[in-house]
Image (cartoon, rainbow, N blue to C red; front, side):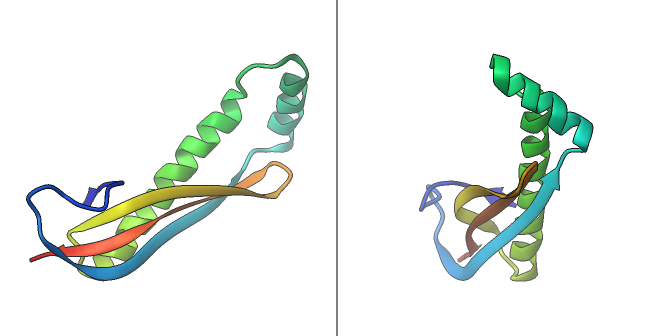
Length: 103
């Protein structure tokens, strides 16, 4: 599945199939939350959360691709990520875009 953040794919013509999306909510355990809280006091990267968000983007992207495949798509254009906090220590990541079929 070709995934691009642009509106067009050079050299390709396509028909729009519709919006596709995939999401996940991820969290770390209490021990990681406690250590992350201490990290906010001294500054620096909170690696556990950075890794959690990388994994969440991979899961969300995979679910978006499955959504696109169900429509018979060849590609997803205008792909974007969004995230939000759903509770302390948990974040939702959504991947979305427009599924297209080459003509």
